[in-house]
Amino acid sequence: MRLTTKGLLLIAIPAVFELSLLSAIVKAEADAAAAERWGQQSQAVLAQASRVLEPVLVADCVAAMKAAVKVPVTVKCRLGVNAQEPEQALFDLAKKVKAAGADVLIVHARKAWLQGLSPRENREVPSLDYTIVRRLKRAHPDFTIVLNGGITSVEQARAELEYVDGVMMGRAAYQEPWRLLSVDPLLYGEPAPFALPRAAALALVPYIERELAEGVRLNAITRHLMGLFRAVPGARGFRRHLASEALKPGASASVIADALAQVVDNSRNLSNIAA
Ligand SMILES: Cc1cc2nc3c(=O)[nH]c(=O)nc-3n(C[C@H](O)[C@H](O)[C@H](O)COP(=O)(O)O)c2cc1C
Image (cartoon, rainbow, N blue to C red; front, top):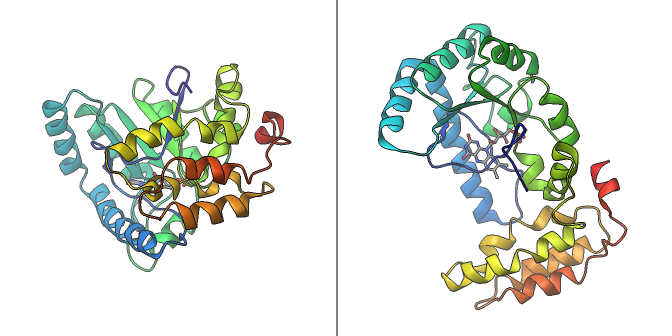
C-alpha cells in the first residue's frame, strides 16, 4: 500500500518523534489490562494537550529534535484548548512550529477541554470543525497539513484531500482495518494489495513468525486484529478462537490460520468494502 505519493493517508500509530499534543485511545477493550493501559495513555496524552498553550516551548522542542535527528519531525495538535480561540491558537502554533522546522502538522479538528470532560468524552464531545484546518492549509500552502478526527472511511478521506495534504485515520483504521484495502483503488487507481480481508490477515503470518522468534507474545499482535471481520459471518468464532488460543504459552502463528478458517468472507469483495 502506498501512503505518501498522492496525499498522505496516515494511520494513527504513535511515532517516536511525534509531539502528541492531544489524543485519544481506542474504545474499551475486552482485555482489562489493555483497557487500563489505554486509559493511562489517554490521560497522559490529554495532559500533553496543555502544550498548545505554550507554542514557544513546542517550537523549541521541534527545533531541538530537528537538530538531533534525520527523520521527519511532526507535530500533532487540536484546534485549541479550553476557551482558546482556534483561529488564534492554532494559527499561532502552526506558524511557530513551521518556523522551527516541523515537517508536518497534524490537526485533530476539535478543541480539547482539560476540565470537565474525560479523555473519552474529549474524543467525542467537542465538535469537529474541518473548515478551520482547510483555512490553515490555505494560509500555509508550503507546509504539510494533515487533517485528523472523525474520518470513518477512505471515501471521506479522499474528499478531504481536496483541501489538505493528508488525512489521518485513528479509530476507524484500528477498529475496522479492512477499510484500508480500498486505499489503493480509491486514492491511487491501483488494485488493492489483497482482494479480501482474510488474505490480508494471512499475509501477516511471516511477520508474526518473525516477531514470535524475537520473543513477542502472539496475543500482543492478535489483540489488534479483533475488528478485522466485524459484521462478517464467522467473525465471532474468529475472535473467540484468537481470544482463547493466542494467550496460551507457546501459541504459534497457526492460531491465526485456524481462526481465519472460521470466517466466511468470500462474498465480501472490494466493491462492498468500499461502500
Ligand atoms: C490505537 C490508537 C492509538 C493512538 N495513539 C495516539 C498517540 O500515541 N498519540 C496521539 O497523539 N494520538 C493517538 N491516538 C489518537 C489518534 O491519533 C487520533 O487523534 C484520534 O483517534 C482521533 O482521530 P479518529 O477520530 O480518526 O479516531 C491513537 C488512536 C488510536 C486508535
